[in-house]
Image (cartoon, rainbow, N blue to C red; front, side, top):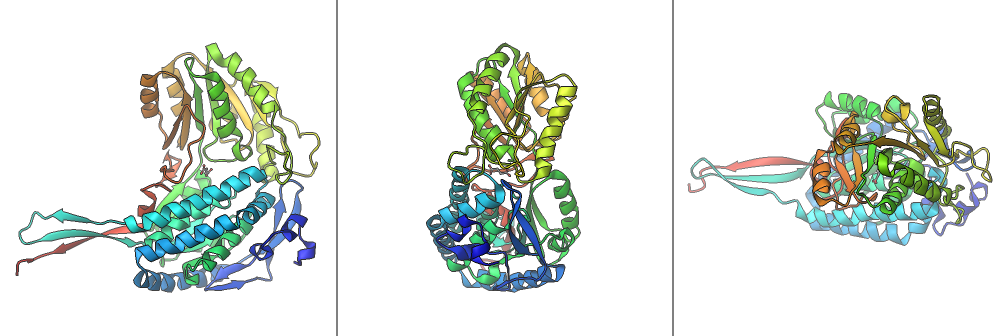
Length: 497
Ligand code: SIN
């Protein structure tokens, strides 16, 4: 593809070379004759074509990563690995506008969100640049005479990284920055909807001095080829973000060779507004955690549970805030709500609305294709349903779109029971001014992340991950490094001999 054939925003990049559909295997950018198209969600036109790599390519990448990680770990100190990450952080920030443009074109989110995501992605790199030096072991008093027990934290080895399209930058860095900090190498299968952002980040990682063999990028549309990551015995770790069904499937494959796993899977987040909550703050929180990324985040509020006495007020105020959203193409500066990533996403929102209305819910606002957008784009209006009940699809299935379904409750016990009545347990939110209730409900919610009086819970320093069928493991934070390490106990006997 020539620059002339590119989207004008790509041709205007300060670094057009950051936009590539090639794979990065064994230190070389390689293009395959077989490609798959990547679509721009706001127009449904092809943004570009990306190399569709094979199982053999995964095997080559894994072998190179295996040799690479041994050299990398043996030849670098934790401080040097931290310095490499710091240089990568600087390059990401220096190129943040270009990366955001690429990200917005392939994902659809607004430019403000895209830029915000790139900075969020970079925050994991700077966080783990510092954590690299904190891979402390222990000295353990031994129960045996003349003996000392030490623990060493060592890299797990080659890590297979499978990332989602909703955060094309941040979900890569949240996984691979701790991997590098620990001394691991990675083989990344980027999402086929948004592979270009991954390639831009990897280019910058190599420019930052991260050894090429440590970072292998293998785009593919062939799911079977990608499962090589989960079955190849040289791969010691799988980190996946995506749906619960796929996560369970990959975990079973990975267990065939006892790999360490981190699974960040689906959610069905409750968002509770108690009668003593600040309603304006709750509306603000709902706008953030329901409509961020057009409702396509794993931590999105999926069920808004509102105390019956404040439901009318909350619904009316939320409808006013939603009416202010301006739906359009992500690169249009006037846009505050982008399209969904694909047609299937739009159909799911429509299905959830249709099902709820057929069972007695009221569509307060939305539900249509917005006016003044490209009719081919994957758009749907931000929508609110009231009078939602547990028998409706939206109660049990993650919508992954801009639909806010409002349920009503009468007591705290009922709200907590409703909130926990799901097999998922990623995020949960609630609004209350009562400090005792804040502590009580935070502890009662069955999820890995709680937002009390806020809809904003994601940050590099905060452990991210779920319970129940939302997954295992924690990303970011002081716990994220351990996901890429093994603990080795070293017992030194006869120390007085
Ligand atoms: C996700 O949706 O998987 C990640 C969201 C976040 O990091 O806030």
